[in-house]
Image (cartoon, one colour):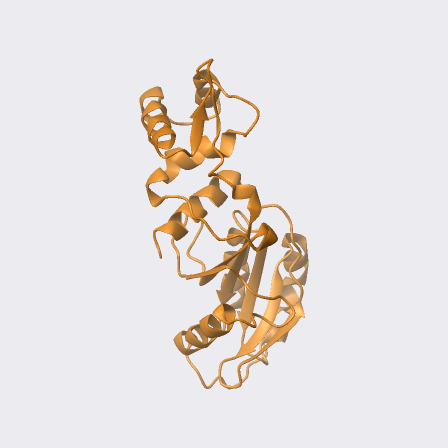
Length: 225
């Protein structure tokens, strides 16, 4: 394993990276984001940073945290122009009829879904999940195995997942090259002292593996602001 003397803590690295991530210049080679969130709990781990982009630079409008697991499940199945019956939702959910009805009512009141004249449900105009692009960042001073595992978890809800490490640690990740390539994970270095951010391996954009997890994550972001 390649080692180098690291003169900062992970907290110091995180604080400096947050300033760069939130800056008007953004990350070199990647750009700026409409929203930056730190250490948000989700169904798959706790990423160091989540950054959001929206189509056509539209404002970031987060989902309410109160939708929870059940609401996320409902929204992940519904579409804007394809009405779904309660029976359909039940067949595509692990939750009871009582629980679904309760959360359907909450989503109706908040205008996140619409009930048609036939009693079926469609997505409301407020739900624009497909307009979001989620980026997950995992910062690590060492422990590459753990970093790769956490980056894999992030791919469940994020289109991009990047591991950020101190300069000089790159070769510690060479044994994970196949895994990193398979999952489209990016690898970058960041020096909090100089503020220099460099891309080692580009992240490859691909759809999040779970729409429900993605919706739940966006709702969790709403609880962190």
